[in-house]
Image (tube, rainbow, N blue to C red; front, side, top):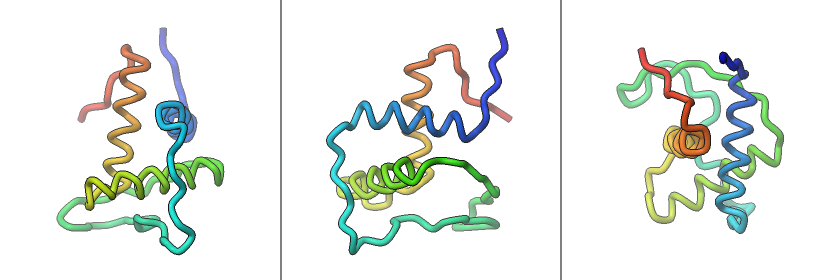
Length: 103
């Protein structure tokens, strides 16, 4: 059976699973800026970045940045890329037949 999902749907589903796993996640202080750069493209620190777009709610976006902020307390360089790895990990454990794309 073949399933097709948009990138936005998959990201929203992963965020929902992370929210269920971290129901009491503390909000980052209003004085703290978004801890990652928005819209990174080109070459950053030797890593080629691709343009990606996701449609998620403001609440999901805030959860993502609150999650990153909290993770940075124990892992100072935790970034959006690591957030995506956590998201993929929880999706993979919830949906074991799903495979990470390889090139």
